[in-house]
Length: 377
Image (cartoon, rainbow, N blue to C red):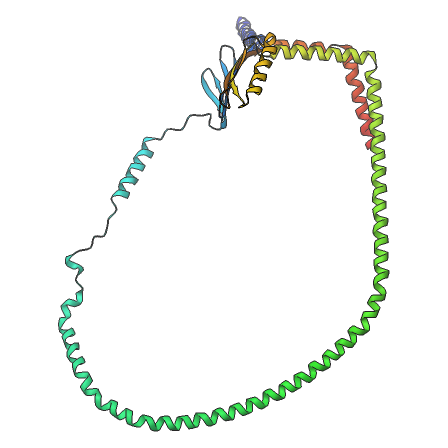
């Protein structure tokens, strides 16, 4: 029995410890504020950095923008998540560095073919005997060929005369036959083409009066049909516009009647009051901005200084704008800090929900939306 009681005691202690941890975490989330800060600078380009921290920076979210958006989430200084460019660049391992070194070394040690001055002489030098033999043959060649050339020159005129006579006779025969054939075919084609042209002109002349008679009737009917379809479309569009205007007037009248009710006014005033409190709570508590503005126009720069003087009772020294009367430029820095407490947001939300008039307004709006959906269906 004592063992069972001891086990139950241990289980109860563990449950209480877990419940205590959960309750402490809930209280921390509710009452420990989330702090935010924003810093920026503008000099020919905008660079902005923002940070949101909670519980002595136990949880931190950083966002920065300088040509590219970067973000990271850290828990107890350890990066959990990071966006594009938010992480550190990866270090190259020793193996990769050794591999790159070996590749570069192998690339530098590539062999280069160097011509050998001793081997640049062609191998045919060794065959000098063949070259001398060729020279002897070339010397002997002309004396041996003179007799054969004389024989060919003597028989050449006879062959040329007979071949020319034969070629002229055959050419005259072929020209005569080709001319006769072409004349016959041309005469036949001319006769057929003339007959076809006559029939085509007769058909065209017979069809032209019929087309001229039908054309006015077709154009008149087409114009009448187009005008009728145009008026029909205009009538349809006017009917649709009239229906839309009727539905719009009905909805406007219903919302006007709803706003005239006393409980609706009370609900709206409650909502606006709580929204104003939320905005006042999340607004930055510290604001500092220093800018130098030069428009290139002394009159406009003087107007900027006058506006700053008029807003000084509200901004005090938190916003400082100095005009530059000499050159045209715009540059400066700004920073702001604030905090948001979840408990305050929940209090404002509960104050809105607990109001009876707000619940009635929400119910009426839902009923009207349901009725509208039923009419559409």
